[in-house]
Amino acid sequence: MNIAVAQSGGPTCAINASLMGVFRHAVKYDEIKTVYGSVNGIEGLIKDHIVDLKNIIKTDEDVELIRQTPSTLLGSCRYKLPDFEKDESVYKSITHTLKRHNIGAFFYIGGNDSMDTVDKLHRYFTKENIDIKVIGIPKTIDNDLPYTDHTPGFGSAAKYVATTIQEITRDSSVYSIPSVTIVEIMGRDTGWLTAATAVLRANGEVSPHLIYLPENKFSVRRFIDDVREAQNKHYAVIVAVSEGVSPDPEEVGGDFQSGYVDNFGHKYLAGVAKALSKIVAKEIGCKVRAIELNVMQRCSSHISSKRDITEAERIGGAAVKVALDGYSGVTMVFKRVSNHPYIIRIEHVETSLVANKVKYFPLEWINENGHDVTQDAIDYCLPLIQGEQNLQVRNGLPIQFVLKERL
Image (cartoon, rainbow, N blue to C red):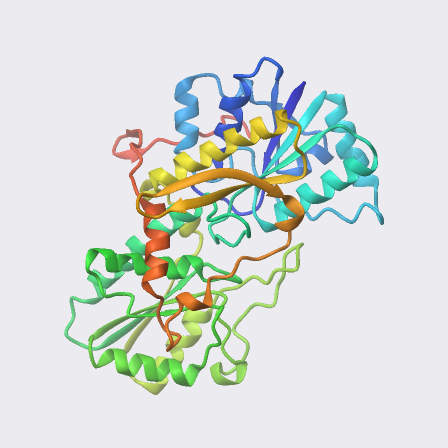
């Protein structure tokens, strides 16, 4: 048989490593003839726009370059499949493409919404008695997929935001005047990535001095009191805040969010740091700066975690074996055995348990004042940022794999 793989959702430093995991393991099996890539996620199967990956990945050097290249080699999408009970036409198009190319297994690399696609496809194939395996491979910097200890992409993003906070701290500390720097970090529903900035404490740093996550109720008045208290100890206060933190609109002087939503109904968020900086300027009157890290958090491969990239490839490869063993409608997951030493196992769970579900940051890992995280959070995150990639460079810059022609 042949197999197909696609990438979906927001790009990360590790999603191409998972793609290479699928590809490198698939070519080892005699029963797999061709490894296809679906262009722009599930849309490629709908439109019959797929490519033979052997025509793109021709050498071991190509594999290594793709592993160190951020974002999605095959392109991505945020396409929400309709319920097949209401609209079967899209599913028929997907089935036509898969059967036309003799594809017996489909691997979808993505986050919460991508697992929704895996679950719906599996249930449709089961109902129609179509023997095509569907396997989910996790990916998201938000680290919010349930049943897995962590997700590929999170470790590298955590390493980037922590390092950036450290550099912002050095920059902010050169002046003798009081200042507050508020750094907005990705995290629509959960605060995993913002909480990861606390790993700096392992190296003796005290910043960020305040950490706010969407899992905890946020009060602007309490925030101002926290900043004032922090200023008694630090003349340059660094605040890490998740983009999903939701102050009362009356407290911030209006709704600071755009109100736009994607195909899955998720709000586009940005602006909490800017809103809070205006309040600090008004209430405290010191020098204040708002910094939104934006998309740099997702694809900063120059400081990616070697462990993250290695695990991303491993879990992609493990998915191939699971499909060949006859499983379908499952998502690959990590199970942590221990922190010291760090040991994980790769397993799989029913995708229906993962799709459209959210794994929130544990409330017990937030301090009693709601403005910091506990040692448990540091112990959890620290193993995931370990190791540095031996990047190939040219003219002082990392080399990245770029397709000569647009897919």
